[in-house]
Image (cartoon, rainbow, N blue to C red; front, side):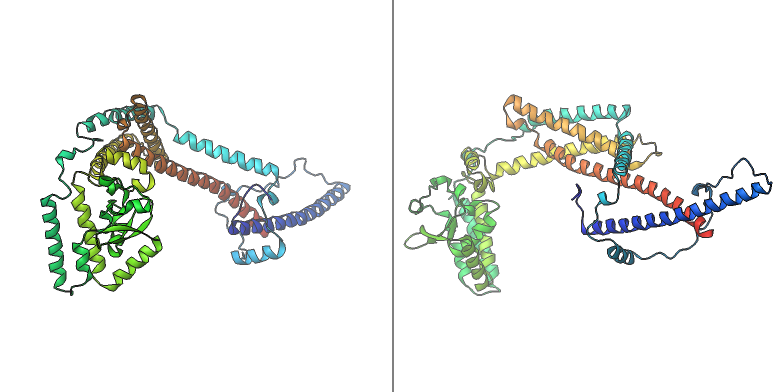
Length: 467
């Protein structure tokens, strides 16, 4: 077993190469026998001519064949060549087992191949290396992006980036304005739906409180819902997961906690959580059955979930940061209890997006400036690699300066997350692009060398067949 791994197609190619190599060895043996016989005949003829007193020229004629470069217009003798499938069949009949490169190439040939690959790689690196002009643009790009990264957190701070909300500026969860708007939306849905569909359980879904809005009975299941912070512990209040779990809970009168445990909820004599657990499979199976039971059950549940999230979003407690309570409950609890909720996150995400857009704009300007110096003579793709190297280095330094600043000041708000996102994007996209162009460059150079050898062999073959 060699040190390389092969696909089935590569094993097939290797076997055909080995088959052709064996044919070449046999042909070489036959040619050696023929050449030796000709040499003996020539020697006997020369001896006979000398015995007859004939003078032979001292300078031997040149039997070397001219190169293909000097005989481009010569047409080789046409020889029928088998199709690939036929070659594979003949190779399988002649060569047994799996063939690896070690079975075809000698150690010296491996060394020559690696040396040739290194020469091509060195040539690629030389052609894509940054010159003095590139370095100047790199310094300029690094300065611009680093300055932008360092001042961005202080600018965003003036717009409230990273700040918690003030509960005094929010409404109470049972504020009359919220309840009035909620009732109006439900009435509109009911009036519109009633025109096309008869009354059913979907009416209850619209107007009754969602099951995940109660904390009564939680001690019986050994779970502390923390009273006013119960939204943190129920997936129905998660701004993202709520669309799935909250809707399923509304359809089935269940409550799903942030540990993924689900319990049945009863409404009489009062709404409370029961110790009866429900698996996630049962939850979604029951939700599916309820959706099939009435055409409007699922739309009404989705509407009820949307209205509940909307009514809670602007209250003093707000809604928790999505997803965190399931994956990192400690962090989710710390943020939520410090009045950092979904609306704060949405605000900060907008700022991050603006920061990333500014970084992207600077990258476009730097790329455009560098493109102005392209002379049009060299390979455009190799020049673009130099551009990408400039942007990759500049963004990495700028992103690193943001991390260093946050580390020194012990303030995570000094992280320019927008710049970091752009830096990571460039890291993956630019390196992937450079590697792809490098592979193409190596392949093209190897193909050029191979084509040159094939031309030489074609010409040699034409001379042999003409004799």
